[in-house]
Amino acid sequence: MPILREYKTATADLTAVRQIFDQELTSDNAAIADMIEQTGKFQGKMLRPLLVLLSGHACGNIEHPHHVVAAVTEMIHLATLVHDDVLDEARQRRGKHTINHLHGNEKAVLLGDMLISHAYHLCCSLENQSIARRIAATTNSVCEGELLQLKLRGRCDLTEKQYLDIITRKTAALMQTCCRLGAQLSQANEPTCNALDRFGKNLGAAFQIRDDILDLIGDEKTLGKTLGTDLKKEKLTLPGIHYINQTKPKNIDWLRQLFSSPDPQKLIQYQQRLTDSGSIDYAWNQAKHFIQNAKQNLPRTLKKQPRQDLENLADSILPQP
Image (cartoon, rainbow, N blue to C red):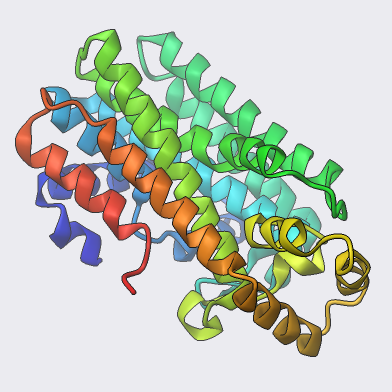
């Protein structure tokens, strides 16, 4: 995986995280073990474990609890992916068939639940139970974000503030926790933990805005998933919110029709309208703003190389023009 070469600081640690992950996620039932193995195909660059490890390295020494927390965050992340694919009726993720496509929604939901259960089982191995409580609170926040998005879907009057609240809960919260716990486990002081918390929050917001943009204008082969999922599920994201604010009220009816019938031709029209109105550029600029804020929150007191790695990681979130 390229990320292992890019961030040499954490290479050995990521190997240890993978070992803990694999040891925890086992089953003596061949069918269940096979489904667990299939989820491994959805692992990307281990971003969340990497945030735990680099934050820990930046503040002090890495110990076994860092590896455990990093594995836990990846399990929770994978659980949310499995559940998201059910909600979105997705057939592909990272170029592979989704669990729900292969095995049906019922098994996919239960597998996601099992991943979360294993995450908390692993958390219980830590002496400091405040870590488990923070992980639990974060998982609650992720669920709240997803519920809020479902409650507000189909709403053409969704505000940017509401959108940012949704993505802060459903995406940024876990990245915040990764950075905070990495620092906390390295005995960082409270101001440093708070600073890394803000770094993760801003990084997560940029990450989700990027994903939402790519769902509209990305390349399916590169992304390994079908475009227009948000439209199909009537989820208004930042480019669409900006577009409505620029053109309302004349195009709101058109957008409502798009929600009710998101065919490929209308998606192409929507892409063009978002581009022509400057809405795609606006969303990219907002993501860049969050990346800049993230880097500005990194204290100068952090170790030099891990700090640079965190900055590089932040820059890698957005594709280069």
